[in-house]
Structures are given as structure tokens and as C-alpha cells.
Length: 240
Image (cartoon, rainbow, N blue to C red):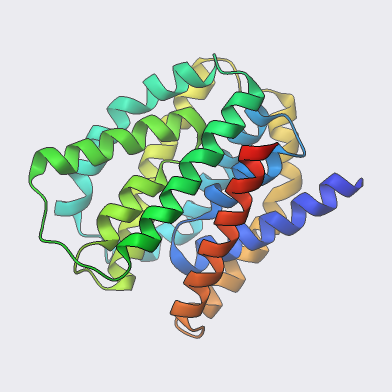
């Protein structure tokens, strides 16, 4: 196994830990980092497969705490936009796609840092549908539909465990639609399955560690660590 695979396995364990702990963040870590090591288009599709695998393990517990009244409008608008994002995904040059993804993640982290702990009143339905649509577009475009929804939900009054459950269910449904769109576009190829097969054990290890540490690790310190990590990753993706 080459160096790039070993480095990739380390990133996958860390991404799995982040997903198991917070309910989101694994695609934001994996898409830009693995795209530096492997073809970006194959990486995005493989990451969607890994995300669906991660969501399957977390879904049963999350369904018990999901706030469907909040999640369904986001999901409905998101799934309508996923195929459009997937269409543009097949047209982008690999380097440009990586730089776009890096820029989006960089902007997300800055917005999250600026928002801090400020809370805002419940948004009207059109705003909720808009957030879902943007997230769906980004899911199809690069597998990184999390930022709009995470920013939106974390600005509300929900406790961490409720947000975590909502994230898990939302991503499971939208990423399932993305996978269907990629399959119809014919971009789920042998290299994609190779990446997925080699990385899925590392992802499961990370997930189990993240679930174990949830509520056992200082959430504030871990959040700072993840934001700092994403800031560094997005900067590298922008400059390479």
C-alpha cells in the first residue's frame, strides 16, 4: 500500500470520528484532502458512498430524535436540486472543482466563526426551502451539502443532540438522491468502488470512536479543533 493510501486512511479515520461525534463534517474533511491524492471526481462519488455507509450506522438512533417538522422542508427542496448539482459536477475540470470546494468550505468556516453562539428566531418557510435547495445543489456538485444546513440549524435553539439527529437524517436522504444521480450519469466506476472498499473499514473505526466519545469529550474544544482543521484544509485546496 502506497503512501497516498496510508495518508488517506488517516484522513478517513479522522473524518469518521468527526461524523460519529458531531453528525456532520466528514465530507468537508474528505473531499478536499482525498482530492489531493486521487482523481477528484472519483473521490466525490466515493465520499458519498462512505457518507451513506456512515449514515446507515447512525440512522436508527437518530430517527428517534429527528424533528420532522424542521427536517422535511429542507429535504424536499434539497432533493429537487441534487440532480442539477450532479449535472454541473460532471462538467467541471478537476482542479477548478477542488478550488471551488475549498472556497466554499473556507467561507463556511468563517461564517460559523462569525456567528459564534448567537441565536436567531425561527426563519419563515421560504428561507428554509432556500437553505435546503442550496444544500442539495452543493451535495450534487461536490458532496458538501452540509454547510448551509449546519449554519442554519446551529443558529437556532435546538440542543446539540437534536441537531445531530436532524443532520444525520437530512444527509442520509439527500446523499441517497446524489448517489442515484451519479449512477444515472454513469460516473460510479471501478476506481470509485476501489476507493470505497479500501476506506470503509477506516471510516467504521472512526465512527465507533466518535460515537463512544460523544458526551465524553469537551464539545467546545473539539468544535474549535474541527473548525481549525477545516480552515487549513480549505486553504490548501484553494492554493493547489
